[in-house]
Image 1: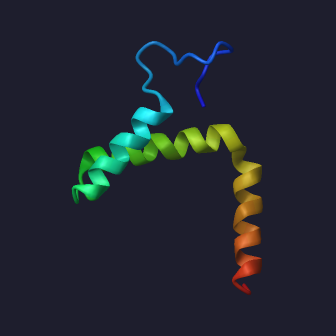
Image 2: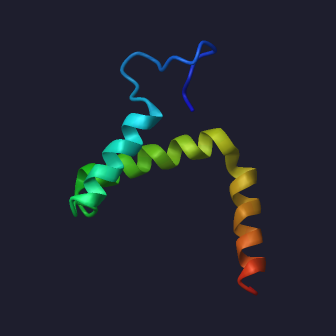
Length: 70
């Protein structure tokens, strides 16, 4: 997720841990409907998509539907 070959993050790019920690802290304190939570949630989602790609998310949706009997 947005890491160089040496494992470092780009300049000004928060680490995955920092994003997840921020998201967690906002959720725990009950701020899950604030603009900051939405911004962090979108950043985490975008990183997941860039790491796992659209094909994997499509496969997940299909397997989820099969599991639910849809």
